[in-house]
Amino acid sequence: MGFPPAAYQPRPGSVLDVDRGFYDRIAAGARELVTRFVVPIRSGRAWEVPAGHVCRILITPDGPQVGDLNVWNRHNPRERLWAARTRQLQSAHVTRYDRLWSTLPYLRPLVTITNDTLESYGVDSEGGRVHDLLGSRCDPYVNRILSDEDFDFHCHSNLVRAVLPFGLTEFDVHDVLNVFQCTGLNSQDKYFMKACPARPGDFFEFFAEQDILCALSTCPGGDLSIPLWGPQARDPLEVCRPLAVEVWRVDTELLEGWRPPEVPAYRGMHGLKL
Image 1 (cartoon, rainbow, N blue to C red):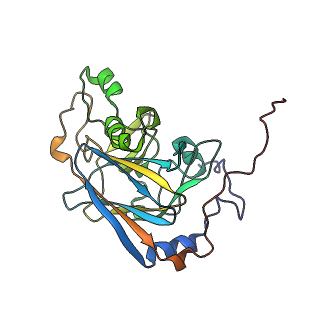
Image 2 (image 1 turned 30 degrees about the vertical axis):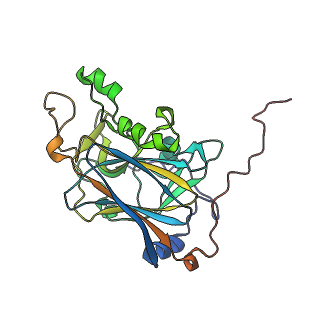
Image 3 (image 1 turned 90 degrees about the horizontal axis):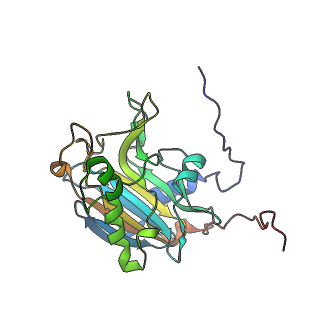
């Protein structure tokens, strides 16, 4: 039995028609390390990535770990990652050449993925895929519903603390890209999570299409090999590990002809008349 074609079909030359050769050159070309840091377990950190730079999130030698990523336009936090539209324009799980799209009325790429060592994971025997846009971040509110307990270090809370130094608040934290997270939908069309398949040295890398602010939470579920809720749930502290982040300055010659994407040319008034 075949499947229907994708609903959103790019036209040649549009911003959805990615120049793969350009991003391959970015991935393989000369670059200079600007900064490197490690995000400890059950914590969060925010950092800036200038337009035309590359950011890499790495699995450390400690072992697999899931990370929840938020992205904003550095100069306008109202423009931020739109997980739902990215699922439609790209896919529910993203990899090399996919883009993370921003909210209306901006609707343009925030980043383009340039490298992913888990790209070959594909679809496993249970329908799991990695780098998830299906689910959102874990948060203390749903945890209270599911467990009747308070816990202050869910990804939502980690991200809230991380962005405060940049003048943002809990209201700016949004649906995430779950980096290294393996998820899918079961036979009842319900969301499931599996143990992270990443290994030390695996990484997920993206090119900043504009000046961006990123925030990353090291999930308190660790590698998700231990259930967070339900009859088998217990504290997964033993499988919580750090994640490393690197920001690289790309050789300027590689950027020749590139420019930050513009917002769509729609100039209508949504049918309103003044």
